[in-house]
Every structure is written in C-alpha cells, then in structure tokens.
Image 1 (cartoon, rainbow, N blue to C red):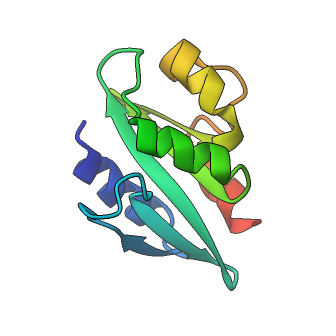
Image 2: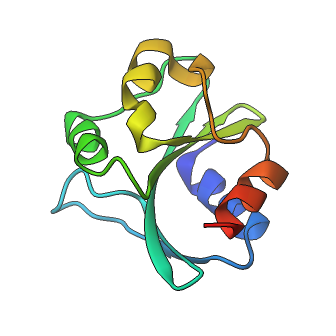
Length: 117
C-alpha cells in the first residue's frame, strides 16, 4: 500500500470529514492531512509500511511531541489499518505497527472515533 492509496481510502471511509491533503516540501514535518470535523481542525500523519517498522522523520517526531492533542498517525500495513494519538509517538518508534494502545484498528472504529471528536 502506498501513502496516496491510504489517503484515498481514508477519504472514502470518512465521508463526513473534510480532508485537506498537504503536499509540503517547505514546512517539513507538517502533517499530510488536515481534517475538519464538527467545526474543528485536526491533523493526521499518514504512514504506510510493509514491515513492522514505521519511518517517521525527526521533523514529524518533533511536530507530534509539540502537538500531543488533536494530531494523529494513521498507519497502513498491508491490508490492516490503525490510528494512534500523537502522544503514542514513543511507542510507534519503539514497537512500530505492533505498538500498543491504538485508538482503533479497523475503518469502522476509526470512522466512529473521528466522528465523535
């Protein structure tokens, strides 16, 4: 799975969310997707991996640490998907896709969680 495919699927699975894809080469570390949910903005970093390890840049790590609330990591792994709060950054770096305490581990639960924000 590629990041652009994960993004397309994310948009398809969450029709009540307004997505703004960010292709940013100047402000490195800024998240891939800005979400507008129930009159509030959130950010989401999209990551895909064929292995357990997740490649997260130092700039993305810094952003996650500075924004522990309202920032998420959506991780695609083969045919699986999980979403984590940014405060789980240490676990994601250490344990990769197998990190404990994801918010949700399937599209329905991801959608249900985000719609309640």
